[in-house]
Amino acid sequence: MSGTLPQNLLVTGGCGFIGSNFVRFWLSRHPQCRIVVYDLLTYAGRQENLADCWAHPNLQLVIGDISNQEQVLQVCQDHAIDLIINFAAETHVDQSIVRPLVFTETNVRGTHVLLEVARELEIRFHQVSTDEVYGHVPEPQQRLEQDALSPRSPYAASKAAADQLVQAYFITYGLRVTTTRGSNTVGPYQHPEKAVPLFSTNALLDRELPVYGDGLQQRDYTHVHDHCTGIEAVLLHGQPGEIYNVGTGAEIANLEMVAVILDTLGKDHRLVKHVKDRPGHDRRYSVNVTKLRALGWVPQYTCQQAIAETAQWYAGHADWWQPIREGSFRQYYQEQYSARLPDTGA
Ligand code: DAU
Image (tube, rainbow, N blue to C red; front, side, top):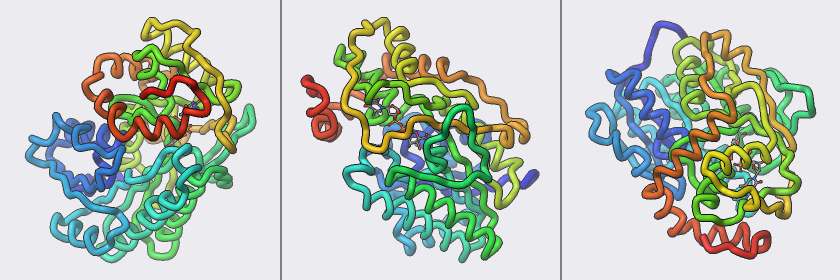
């Protein structure tokens, strides 16, 4: 798709973690483009995530649900949208274990609605997916984009279903689609339900860090900046119908992730507490990123650098995360961790 840069973007989930980082990134790289952020502003989608951007003349917010076909259609028509980038999703595995149906509603039905609108108005479509669709990857294997999907949590299954719909719309209708499958992404504005921000903020509060099981699970922790440049490379140079993995291409154990956080923040390693494991916990994710690199994309951060920089960001932004931890997150934290940790005051 080289050469034609879409001018009017609908960024669904643009107030969430990766979505808001992408919006900020895109405005700085392509300030002539107009962006409509379409977001339901659920617990993880927060206008504050783009507080420094709302004054930009080419950015605006529409509050809405991706499952609402009428509204999505209207917004796309009103703003002459020529590219939909779908970041909107329920994304936390632990939440999908306790309330799985909302994941099907948003991640599967919501994506399907967007595809229907894209088909009707002939709008290019990009799906932001995840490496979790491949399921556990035994060492020393790495997953390629054409490998079979083997999701193992309700979250991963919902994202895999959405991926299949995206491909079906390419094959059946010739819709111009692309997909990126990102690995564990870290950086500014990630909700503290996820491991790296949870552990960073717990450490800053001198609370224990609840490490599931033996902590030897492996993840490819990728900085959100690299995730954004990966999506940009696909939007500028990717081929319709193609899928691209995004990650550093190397993974580390969770215990190493924890050690980087504690060392970065100057905290005692005795804060680590091994707790009851997550049901169906995938042991290892690993993606091969050769296909994305062939588009000219080069990641800037190792896993360790990405985690350290993220921990530093949380150390400097208590004004952002403290209200979240003191709000509705407190109840979630107690439900999720009270049986695991004696000290669950959020
Ligand atoms: O791989 C990409 C995926 O990465 C994304 O699609 C998901 O949206 C994102 O949530 C993430 O999934 P994980 O389950 O790997 O991320 P999470 O941050 O929840 O956990 C990272 C690792 O840390 C995982 O092995 C579970 C572990 N963990 C997590 C939490 C929340 C703990 O040991 N203790 C915890 O309290």
